[in-house]
Amino acid sequence: MFIKILGSAAGGGFPQWNCNGLHSSNVRAGKAGYRARLQSSLAVSDNGRDWVLLNASPDLRQQINETPELHPDRNGARRNSPIKAVVVTNADVDHITGLISLREGQPFTIYGSDRVLATLNANSIFNVCAPDKVARKAFDLDRPTALEGAGVDVGLVVEAFAVPGKIALFLETGNAGGNFGSRDGDTIGLKITSATSGKAFFYVPGCAEIDAPLAARLKGADLLFLDGTLFTDDEMVSQGLSAKTGQRMGHISISGPEGSVEAVKPLAIKRRIYVHINNSNPVLDETSQARKFVDASGWEIGYDGMEITL
Amino acid sequence: MFIKILGSAAGGGFPQWNCNGLHSSNVRAGKAGYRARLQSSLAVSDNGRDWVLLNASPDLRQQINETPELHPDRNGARRNSPIKAVVVTNADVDHITGLISLREGQPFTIYGSDRVLATLNANSIFNVCAPDKVARKAFDLDRPTALEGAGVDVGLVVEAFAVPGKIALFLETGNAGGNFGSRDGDTIGLKITSATSGKAFFYVPGCAEIDAPLAARLKGADLLFLDGTLFTDDEMVSQGLSAKTGQRMGHISISGPEGSVEAVKPLAIKRRIYVHINNSNPVLDETSQARKFVDASGWEIGYDGMEITL
Image 1 (cartoon, each protein chain N blue to C red):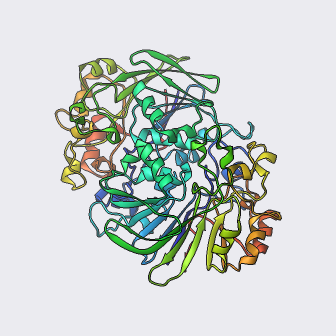
Image 2: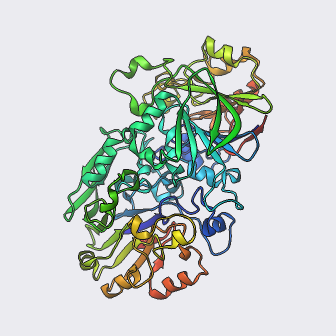
Image 3: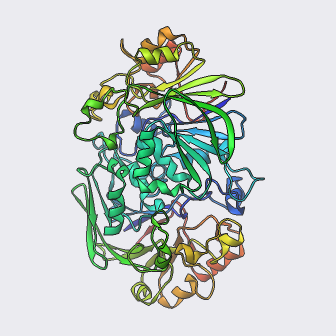
């Protein structure tokens, strides 16, 4: 199974368009120790020919351009693509907007929860992926679904499961407060299994807490991509970027007694990679103490173009 | 007045993600005489400090990254942007999707016709540009509107006018046929005037025909950016890329007795630049006969990063 990180940043990317904070301004200025990052997405393939995207970021057109594996086959039809399916974990704009760039009448399948598909259905702009060519398939949580698209069985099985999280920001209403940290299925993680090798990995780009059911599920895994949005819960507040804490945004922090490094430590996961990294996160500076802490913990900081074979 | 082309390609960009046609495969392979192009957008500024975008393409985040004029001021607030307003000419996905990338609570103003704003209002995803921070202002056609955003008068005046065109593809319904080539306000052109110098230019990225009212309006202009989608009406059909002609898509062709080169010839426009160039257009090959025809006609082929001072 081949896995490639298309984007390792949280929503907004790195740098963020309107951010003059320390890290965004440093990466924009080309400071050593920083690298730019596109928004959150992975590509996965069992056979190296047919690919599935996990989330479709607003940067998807650039991500396809920069990823030869996702280019049309030069010996194929006038219009063709190796992208056979897109699995969406929630309705955040950084996870669904890229679907708009997959227009032009190319058949593929969109997989998501009922809730995510309801958001796509309620926004007519997603009809650029014409429903007669682009199937939208809801998966049940906690049940394996074999992925297919454009008539091709891609040899991958997805199992989606609810994780502590919150509803997409643009769908919040006045009383959304009660939803924070909920397990209502607004935020899901994915287990992707190769149908040929049986190998599997977990992709959990948004997660408010590693609670007991999630810990039980992840235990002993070969590979985990986890929400690395924030290093500390209040870093956006203390950097003057926002009034929101990580808990308010539905994101666990990396550090601290309730952070993900500590929470995952007892789970004996072989390879652990942070993705969905926010522009406020000090690990973006490769020379920082935060980065050294993560390196020493045995976790890796994912980067755009990172390739893993499992 | 400073004008910069952020993207010179039609919807899909160049190369287009799923296109294995001659030109997309050549530019992807790095063939000499080709350059990649992002999707259709201009940036305009009267004072060089406050900027207005004409259309917000799906590539907007990349366009901002690649355009230093659009970066936050390093000496400004933690969150800041020189982008004060976006003027949208129609509801095509290549002209509105970039609005989704202008989230993060930054104040600016979106200008469009009633019809375009109705599409934004009907798609909740655009609420990432929170209505309490991002004003949506409808302009009347054929009346000058002074542009402002984030409390700043940017010193530019826009006058929008209907041109022959058609409704956005994703909004077409079964009986949309009657709308092709209509002047119902689904497709508009813009006249942008500097309030300080009085200089003006026209931006008409989609246009089915240079009819008499449009010709009268453009006559004697200093500068015109015009729909250069296609070189010949049937090129997408003959290249095996689509069953649609230019007329079906609402786009005039460059060449031929009814093309834009001929139609604009009597209008004595000082500088004429094609934008919104489709991946099928042979002018994308700088060595082509089509390109030589355009060069000899006195027109220019716009390119990403092209700068004009007026």
